Length: 295
Image (tube, one colour):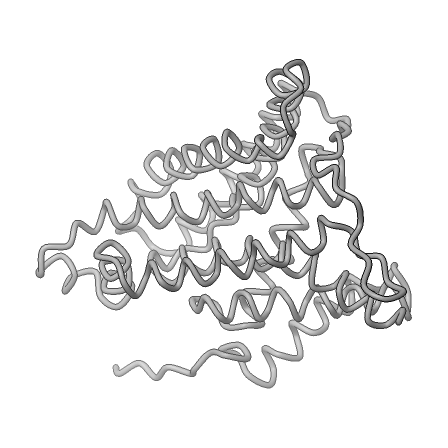
């Protein structure tokens, strides 16, 4: 029973990794850019959640889960702003320039938040005041079930969006070939901006799910979360939506089992060790396919 509970806990944190990894994999799959500032968008979303609860919801007696609305809006606008100001001017530059810019944006956001709000952690009130769900002898927190269900639902909706809608098909076409997409009338700039917007909105959802499970925020919280989510995207197959979700769930389960049965101090080492093994055995990721480029 304890083992099953650890699997469920792993699926919870893995679901959060999966949501964050979806942002990484969408941007990379379409813009061929590794957005290392994605973790900081989650951090800003977490602070937005705290301030929304304290300034608007707490005094009016409204349920705290309503904080998801302003959090998603702020994260989406921040993602669009970053793409327009930092990445768009470098669209035709060498990839290393984009990579360095992404790291710079990440450090910039961290330091701005530390300067304005301080470096100390802030507590987050309980967002979901719902009794645990009992299944036999197990007592599973509502947050755990909610996180897993929301991640699966958003993954299905994202897949349907990409395959069934005009904008989704435009994003798929842009990911295949910028030039060809532009020739058939697709506005590549708008498509890339929409990609960042959707990825950042998912980061907003991930931020509120994360603080509902780990109720504190601080300026550096997005760094390790972002790195692990990026690791999940690579393990599953970066550029693939199913790969991002699969990689996130695998990473979460491995981390939970390591903390429970081996050592919490070794959890991160084993997670990144798994990344090394996957890259050695299958560099394209578990669900990825090796692509040969013609010279």
